[in-house]
Image (cartoon, rainbow, N blue to C red; front, side, top):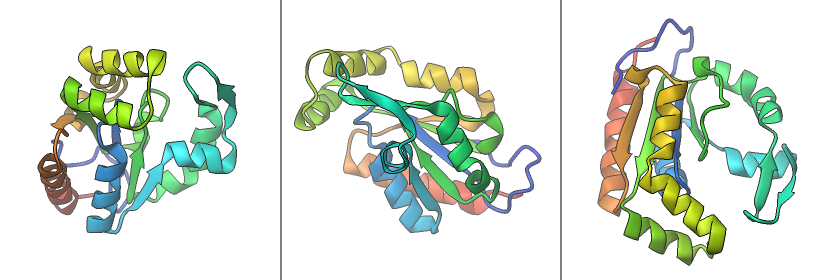
Length: 177
C-alpha cells in the first residue's frame, strides 16, 4: 500500500473502499471508521437520503445515481480528510480526493451466496458475479487512480475483514501529510 500522500494539505487521509456489491465494503468501512474515528460515507445511503439520483432503474432495482450531485455534495467534506468512502463505483470521484483506493474482492461462490441472501436474482445477480469474475472494479480503479494508491484485498471471511481493517488502520497511522 502507498505510504504517503501526493502533496495534499489534508491532515488526515481519505480512503475509498470499492468492489462489487457483496464484497464487504460497508462492513469493512464501518469497522475501519470505528477503529480510526474516521467518518464513514456510504454513497448508496447518501444518494437515497439526499435524493442525489435521477430516478429508479427497474431492471437493476436501484437508483440511477447522479454523479455530479454526489461530487458536489461531498466536495467540502473530502477537503478536510479523515473520510472512508464506500461505493461500488469509483471512476467518477475526483482523483485528488483519495490517498488510498481499496478494491475488495471475494471468491465467486461466496459472493454468489451473499448476493442471493440479499435477494439478488436474474440480471442483477449475473451482472455482479460477472463483474467480480472479470475484475471489473479493480480495472476501473487502476484506470482511474495512480497505480501506487490502488490495492486489492481479499474479503471472503470475517478473518479477512479483520485483517484488512488492521492493515488499513496501520496504514492510516503511518500516513504523513
